[in-house]
Image (cartoon, rainbow, N blue to C red):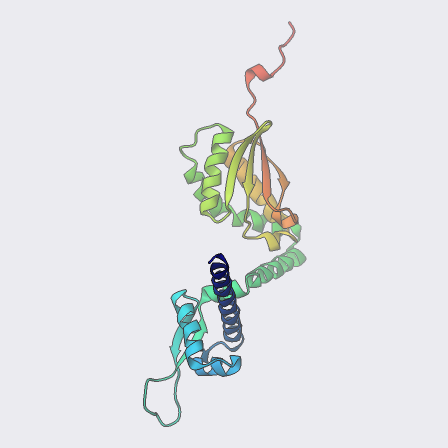
Length: 239
């Protein structure tokens, strides 16, 4: 009985993997062609009409493709008008996630070439203004303690797509960001990381130090937040 269950599970997993590969091929064809009918896709992939419709129905349900009516310039036959399938905007971006990174990098290179590194720094600072304002609004109830503010900031950054968390360590606190929307661009232009670090420092209300960044090959962007200095931490003055 156990062997039968394992065989069935293996067969299901293999079928699922095969379906995934076929849908990847369908998506790649649509990316290359712009749009195609089910018949065209089936002929290209050597799939039966029923098989290709099964994959297209699943991709429609997942909002990976959308339909468009095909203009028929010849005599209209019986039956429904043919429909072409095209990738949705979200699916195109998933297939080519760094396309816009390339454009952004090229734009920053142009800015640096024609206006200097100071212009890139100014651009990076301007880009984080809106993020800073949104996070500042989220920190209004966090109080003045830097660690508490770091925890509130982590929640705000997570809502912005940074997958952040804050932890308390012996020397203070640590803010970790497990995702970076501009990592590929910041690898060449660290001014983006510097501008973000300055925002973190202003929002928390104390000097912070970047220890690691995804842009430089680290797994996590890590920012150290020093523990608040208390009066008792200072050595007593001699009279």
